[in-house]
Length: 308
Image 1 (cartoon, helix red, strand yellow):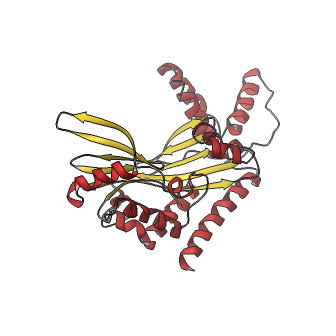
Image 2 (cartoon, one colour):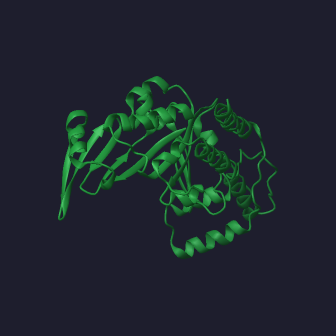
Image 3 (cartoon, helix red, strand yellow):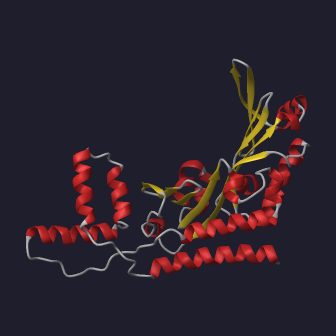
């Protein structure tokens, strides 16, 4: 279930001329960047971008896309190991001591209804900052980021071949992202490449992916109720309360308003008004149950695969 997987290998771990020759023989040259104290060669290998300087070899890309040619499909652990080995095969050197700078654990999930209906379930977890768009929800945290989005909508822009194949499907992609200080965040002695071959590290990452989803509060469409018609203000408040629930609860509605950057006095009055409304609760379990079931199934399948 690895997706994005970025790493850096210090120059003490490789021969510059050897890598330069590999670049010339096996890679697609992209550009050269000159600095005051040196330069970098930028090349592409499949979907990966590599940057070579006198100090390091850096790599950014998606393991899933490296393996499948797209990142709609999902990688299991044995496929992750195969994909990691490809770097050593191509460069003819060991990457055991390379430092992993980013890893995403992700799964594409085929749903029975449009993805937006499931995105509308998701409410900002405690200690996260939300970013809401039409086809995605990103919750940014200090340790990790949780990202839910319409994978088919993304392929329409980035991967035309996959879009043609999956355009009639409802594919929700959920990924958990770790960047910077991975060792502390994942409880590892270090964040070197060799740790990510290890089954225990994979178990930790899959468990964090699963728990990340569990930590996200879920809401569904609010049921219609009898409105308070005692006054025009009461009617407005009742209708507004229903609208807030339908759009995902107070947190998500507030985030959408703040994206428009209201003036301070408007923001103050708006917050006071929101505080008078009761907190929304989960009502209809249908969509939530389906998403819970799919996440549970993926997690159990991965864990069973590791112990088989």
